[in-house]
Amino acid sequence: MQKVKLADIRDEEPASQSGKANSYGVVRVGEIMSDGIGALFANFFSFTFVSLVIYLPIILWAAISEDGLAALRGDFNQVGFLNFGIALFLTMVAGFIAYAAIVYGSLEHFASRNKGLPEIISGGISSLIPVIILSIAVVLLTMLGYILLVIPGIMVSVALYVAVPAVVAEKMPISDAFQRSLDLTDGFRWSVFGVVILTGIAGQILAFILSFAENSLLTSGDIGSLYIYLALLALQMAITTALSGAVSAATYSHLRIAKEGVSADNIAQVFS
Image 1 (cartoon, rainbow, N blue to C red):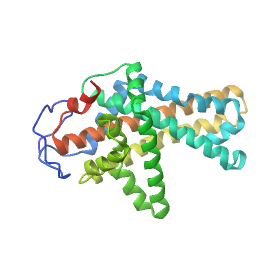
Image 2: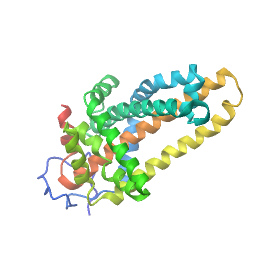
Image 3: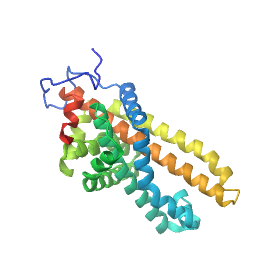
Image 4: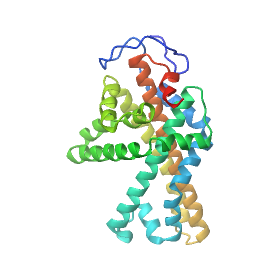
């Protein structure tokens, strides 16, 4: 089958809405990761800066408060469950905000319309409330699946993987975004699962690298070492969020191209 590229496909006859794969293309994990990483590197400053700014209040809390630092590191014994829960919730919400902006910037990149920092922030803010509500719902459903059994949690995370990009790109109601993601991933969930795994591995590699710095910097007791650690932590969080957003946007684009025969330019047309 002929290789399908985001930039090469233009207006074609829409495919059947049956939700099954069709002759327009296939979904390949390698191509999705390549496009997602390409969008990240092409917009590296904008994507990471957006994430850094949004995570900044949490990092500052950790810089001026021992409880904040302990909460950010997940130290239950020192900080207590309540403070840890607050830190986790704020970190998640901050991540969702950055995620929306990065998804928007990535979709525009795939349509060969690279946006500047103000436009990326504005594009994320335009879908802010639906993205936060939808993301929290997806996280809760995924957690419920993991509590019941591990496999249902994985199935939920894969099936709803492109719900947020659908809201950002199509400006649809939250309730419709769930069904939209189910329809788009149907028939391609093993591929989406591969994308989820590879993205998770990349995030774990960044966290593993940071753990070496954590052991040496936080044991020194020097305030300068603490600030270096927090700067590295913020950078790691920013890059991980940027990569996740770019790859999920690439996944959404590839699924729509494969199932509906639309172009990357058409996908981002709603932003024009």
